[in-house]
Amino acid sequence: MMTTLRCTSPVDGSLYCERPFASDGEINKVLERASKVKSDWAQRSYAERAEHCRRAIDFLVKHADQIGKELTWQMGRPIRYTPGEIKGGMQERAHYMIEHGSRFLEDISIQDDHTALRKTRRVPLGTVLVLAPWNYPFLTAVNAIIPALLAGNTVILKHAEQTPLVAERWAEAFQNAGLPHGVFQYLHMTHHQVGQMISDSRIARVSFTGSVGGGLAIQLAAHKRFIGVGLELGGKDAAFVCKDADVERAASGIVDGAFFNSGQSCCGIERVYVHQDLLDDFVTQCIAITKEYALGNPTLESTTLGPVVRPEAGLRIMTQVSAAIKAGAKPLIDADHFAHMDLSNGYLAPQILMDVHHGMDVMQEETFGPVMGIMSVSSEEEAIQLINDSRYGLTASIWTNDRERAADLATQIEAGTVFMNRCDYLDPALAWTGIKDSGRGSTLSSLGMHAFTRPQSLHFRN
Image (cartoon, rainbow, N blue to C red):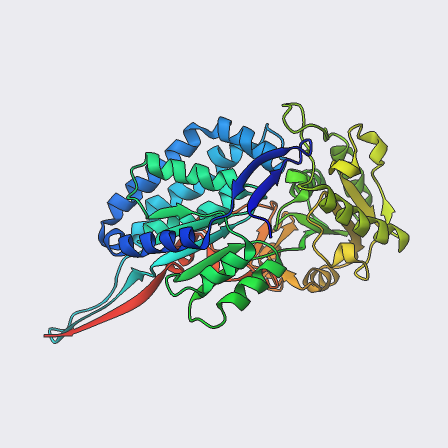
């Protein structure tokens, strides 16, 4: 049994950092500290809780460039983008929740009729276990950490083994913000220890972002307890380019949605359905845009496409692509165009596949890499049928100049979020949720805040 967590950098295969896994005794101490301070934290004003969170986010933003370098070495995203995860999306989401959280937590009062006081209020759950992934380690963690703390819960963070320093940076930020000891803590744990913690009565809720397999394991570990489990899982997200779409805009947005972060996004575009009248123009533009990517060392500012997280992930992706080609798919991108293509080390050239169909895994199973398949469709009905022919349902995007058409099509699409003329974006004012094997529950918006509370009704007779 391994006693240490080892983070191997996808940049060059070197050991980037190593940390000991927590002992069972250390885990118990963390749980005890969280339990002891949860009542005091819950009773503090929203303004005080929000100020601690604001200071922590400001600390992370201030040090975003330094943290971005660490992040590039841990998970391989180009350095030109990693600081932006903190300065951009994470900061935006956190500030939105901090600004609007007090309104989301307001009591629901029933008009007093002189015989009784009646209202329903939202109270914190207790201690929340946050299990965060490596692909967008700050963006995913902030979705749970900040609303859980704002709602009055204590938080224990276990981050993915590929990005252990992210958990340590969160702890450093909250310490700098003066957060009371024990309100936020982190642990480096094995999967077995995570299962044991979920079974512990001191954990009131689990918030997990990761694979379908991981979600099933979390659900199984929690099945003997009546606790909330939020699961944001995988995706095989689709884009539909309608007959009236702006082809240039669609090609640019969809290619970015497919290949940013080397395609390692739960809501990345992996399936594209294009009206037959636009197919040739759309494909031509997608090829041209894709060839502009610079694959290489992600620590260089000139690089726009880094390696996938591990060489074995690259081999799995290419196995899926090779199977599709063997079954008749046509690759449109020559890997030789990318000088730094090195499959053995996880440096994958982006790939566009034509002549694909839903009998291929590349159009059914999550790829989680820089690959997208394109199919021609003759009607909206055909496109909708194909979009819904998936066990996943995280997001879908519609590319059209007709908002009414998009609204009508959205009612027919089985997905948690439907975009028009954009993709791969989380608006903090909107609930982020998935259906089917993409998970259950929601984060962000008032609904996401409510997930970290329970309703308590008061009926006081005069």
